[in-house]
Image (tube, rainbow, N blue to C red; front, top):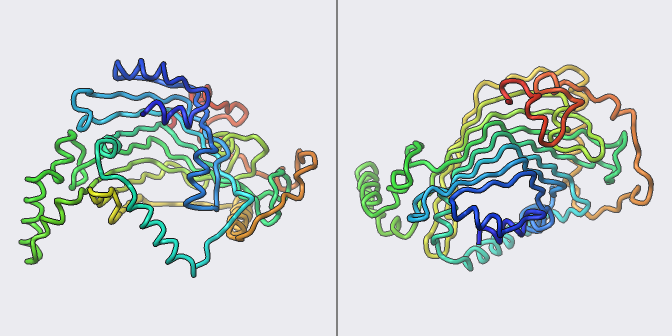
Length: 355
């Protein structure tokens, strides 16, 4: 099942090789190009504001710690770099506010048709994910809805998540063994939680309800950098960030996520996210401020709900423009040399904090 899913989403994937590696509990895939069409088909069911243009993974490795008890033992996934380019779609069918109640009903009805919370869901909830660096670039089209790059093209917004770690934790936000982080969902753990709640609130015992649900606790930690700058056609997310002006760099972020799931049909009953940021300082000069205003105007134009015809679809690509020539190149000072930003091999050119 794991191999079939990878074959659906990865170009040139050979499941026989991964199946052989899974028998040893370890595997590695390098230079991965992700098929964006199946992901975009899923993405369209949630939003029509963005679509994937490209996704590249430099190296992905996994480690199955125990086949004897895969329900409890986590699958560890390690990724070196991920490059994601998001673009504004030419079709934008925005849902009106009047249709939101009906859309909510459809989402609930669809969720009710899901199967119960079982082995696959438990394995997914026990996955530990470590990513060295994630580059994400979003390119809006602005008021002139065309994919042709020129002076009219707004700047792109680039975000880097550095040292991203996503793990399961217990109800106190602490990492531990699978048994420790799942204890609150066991019979004894739920009895203890229900007793504490009854003592604190002097209310009815909700143990019967809690036994029909599970609480999933996650923690995500990372360092965030954000940049804005003009792109040329074919730029990767990493190249876009390197050629952009950094607004702020390496801002620590920690997020705690709580999911309340019903066992019978695997519906998510509630979600709570608590995020904490350190002190944020942004210094802007006039060149950066003008780019930022242009970028925000381009993002605002994304919310025009209609289908567009590219006015330059049958013409040759513009190779330059006044606005594009004025981009500020400062990210290379912090993160490496702008003229040497290949998808994979240039990791060594980054400074010590990104090495």
